[in-house]
Image (cartoon, rainbow, N blue to C red; front, side):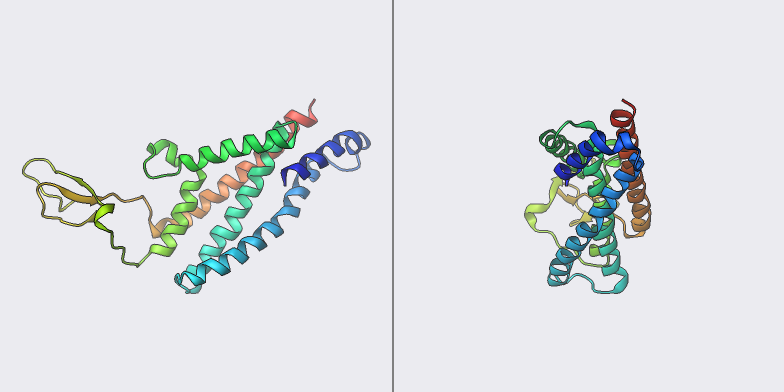
Length: 217
């Protein structure tokens, strides 16, 4: 996607921009709209193969929400994300390096072990919350012994009121506790709104970046 987008950008800068055949924003939006159907279609194929074979909930509200979050919103996000890098780089090789770096940063700061602030600003946090909240809601989760974190509560207290997966609520020592991951089924539409906000931000970043670094020169 990026190599083709950069070639089209170079052609626009050499030929089309001087003739004013069409506006530069039309070029960027056309590239985006041309890529989305392919990416959403292939994501849908992957969804049909994996979602139903794993035997996730097939209710329309659950399966449909998963498709909307993964196939539509997530595909739209990373498509715009990839295109948003191209105005700032001179060639496809640099675009590949920059995309890998920023994509890795977004993934690294979306985990449950990251600082709360960094976790909150990562788009992947909300995509993961949407998908996990949808497929794990009303499902019993049973952990293995090796998956527990063990610690002792303060003196004279038990772990009864601790938050999370509580294997021994009356323990006063060596309490086995698996902390929650901050996922709530009730927040799934909030997550959709935040995902849309990140998509709009990337779109604005793409257009502003092209204007500042390409058109205004």
